[in-house]
Image (tube, rainbow, N blue to C red; front, side, top):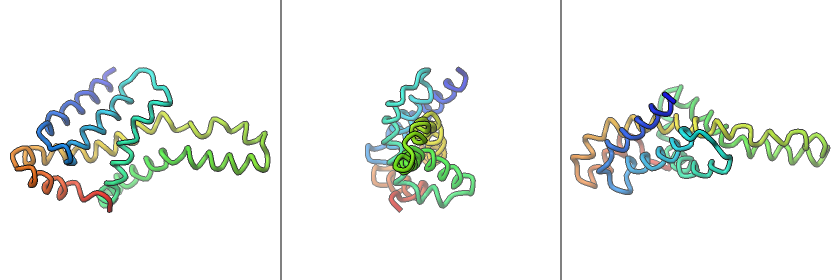
Length: 164
């Protein structure tokens, strides 16, 4: 309950600080994807199909991968861990498919492997979003007072150009 309140307060603070950000800016993007990711962390029940709400966050983080990779070693470790969490379903499903060609009964016993990381994905992506949200908090005052073109320039220089 306390963790949910802290997550909600953090996302609310992030959204408040970037409330005047233009729609195409990094501050707006991180607010949008943070709200979606926080929704999954706060909800008391977590159906597996709700992971689709993390698709915008995963795609946006993928576009910021170079900026994240150029940070400290713990951030790189977090990036690799979150990438493995997201990719685990594909890796394990491919392995089970290969095993089913040889031994269908062994593959049948491993059916729980692909969805095993589904509950950790929101946490991993939210931690990466928090790393980038710190930058939005730092540049929030500058980007609110600057013009729209300068706002994007400030955001790009602080967070890093996506798509690297």
